[in-house]
Figure 1 (cartoon, rainbow, N blue to C red):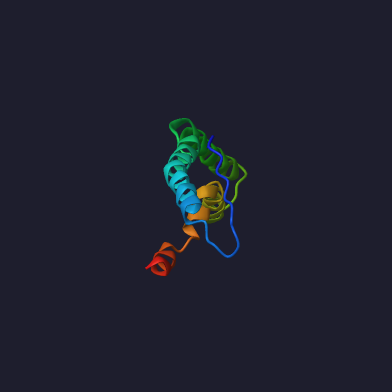
Figure 2 (figure 1 turned 90 degrees about the vertical axis):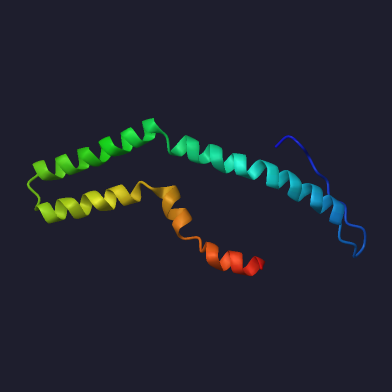
Length: 102
């Protein structure tokens, strides 16, 4: 993201070439940005920590003598709350967006 693009609008004219250049840069850099974001969040070390956290919650609740059904429910809530990026992406309706582009 080193390249700086200046868009100059003259009157009512739409700066098509400037916008084309801007979208070209975005098109090149956004996929790598998303790929790197996922790689930093979803890697083997993170998955291992996530699994250990779930196991610890389950074990602690069980040791406290809570009913099994409650332990499972609370453990699942914890597990689901940890997948922040997945939840955010889950709420995007890609079909509607694609339909808007057509």
